[in-house]
Image: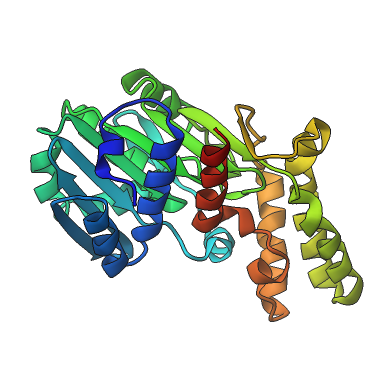
Length: 307
């Protein structure tokens, strides 16, 4: 088991990436969080769960870590998503992400006290948890407390003004990991990313595509439309992998284009169609497989093994 001492450094490190991905996975369950933190050598851990915002914070020596849980059902989140950018001191941000951090402010007061004293202050999260991490980092920086962040499969948090201000206020402190076919980092439309991108690409990503086309051949027209949308998005995202001819996982810096408003509405309609047909879209052809935190951990561990 890796130790919290991996956090006593800054910058990009694969062992730290695996460690914080495991912390992000542990954040999905209170008992798992306590067990993980104890095994990692943290001396104190507090979990929180309020208004569907869940996570934990841990401390040891000069290290303080805050981990947010993400969503366990990204398809449902995208299906029901409404993106309203609201005012923030650094620009406009997603209303739900801003409100989510506000909901747990009282739960984080104890952590606020130790955060300002920690030499190494870290925030992490998977999926929506990564978005909450950015809002929290901005909150602390406005209080004069800089932090470092690793996020996994994080959606965009704010409009371009917020993204630019974040980069100015916390330069080099956010590393954003994206698994090759993960669609969640490509939303919401009209928003912008910030931080240092590290996108994982690996062989075998095309294996799911024939399965998508096979489903389309036997399902109803509505579901076939859903499959075609998913296939298009998947093929687009793996084009770079096909051209590279790689045989082992690696990390690249190129960003996949965000979904346009039209593409996003088509994706929502496709997910709605599959829902009406009684299909579990995510499970049927793994449109969201690459968003799973377990996939991030597995591939980052492979990268670490080959480093």
